[in-house]
Image (cartoon, rainbow, N blue to C red; front, top):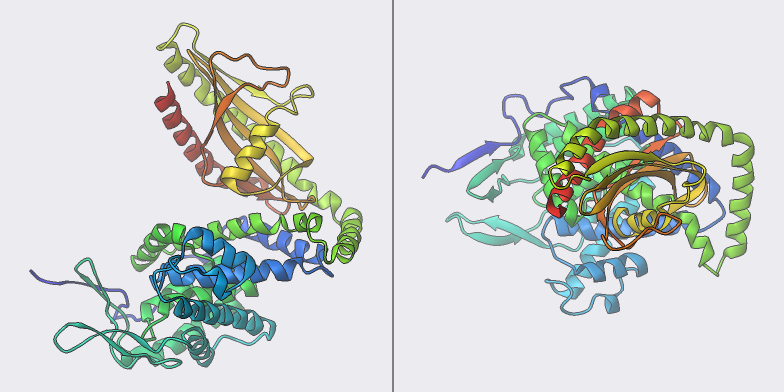
Length: 496
């Protein structure tokens, strides 16, 4: 049987520049994430909240970047403990990882040290260079002494690891009978110089951060310049770009592995957009965590006075200088609500016809928030946010909803709730959907509550920002909404 070979690096062209209009690669919510995270950092000046958040984020990056590469595995519960409390030996119990504990801890510390170095590099405003990439590799792989290789008979062996310098032998991994060929050693130095030069052009042209990060990550992996550690380096370089633009490091977790590998394969085939979109998705994940930072003030007793003082001063400044600008997101929320209402109106007749086949009383109709029903679904919204979508609900500045009510032999309602996200008003809102299936033998109370089952119908809520445009938001909304409706109809089919 002939071995299949796939050239990841094209020997005819080498790495190539972005082969499409980079404006088509941009993701419209990234400027909103960037602006609100900047405002949040400003609001929290004088507190330790931002530095603590970055410390935990760095630990998560360090843990997950090695798991993605199968260097080790760590139990999920232990992973969270290490993120929260640091890389301490007593926290990594025997049996919670598949490799020697001391080895894993040293890798974690090296990987965390490398990301800390990326933050320092950004603060120093140095331009990216091939020599810095070598420096970063040496730090990242400091404690590794060997890597896997193949001997002359094709047998796997351990070979001494070269750190901080380009590979001197081909590194063509074989997966599922396919050999993946990267840049040969003799071309690595030239290709890395070209990588750095093209990246500098992207910076000068002000290419969007998410597109810069995706391109740099992918073209680096095409070259695969080092003997080992290329995946970790690629994520570190993408993180460098994002941090330079005031965004979050690229944290790819074990749960993102499939989407991540699929996006890289799409980029190998010439389509960079899935990788750009994945980077944007992961930025939204960290954004949801970041906007809840102020919650720590309620529980941190060591520096409460300084924190509250900083928060109050920043809040006063925001109230005076920014409030009207931030409230522009309410107008966009009106457009989102209108579009949700229109789409539910479009599908309601078809849903009614389907339910009438089950019972003569089958029906579907739309309800919207009014002065009397504005408080409905409070518990359900909080439950959905806390246990599925992962954010803190803020009803303080804006709260609305649109719902599709359905009745047959059972009752259900698909609710799209729109409200603030995180403590304090930041100029961002989220649309969070859920499907509630109600028990048949219970009457609703005066608040519209009934014993029910809450069914998630979205992997993440739809977030939009004060500095968005209505056109961009509605364009983003469409595919997200259609996916929610598909999941909802599938769930309804299973519960009829």
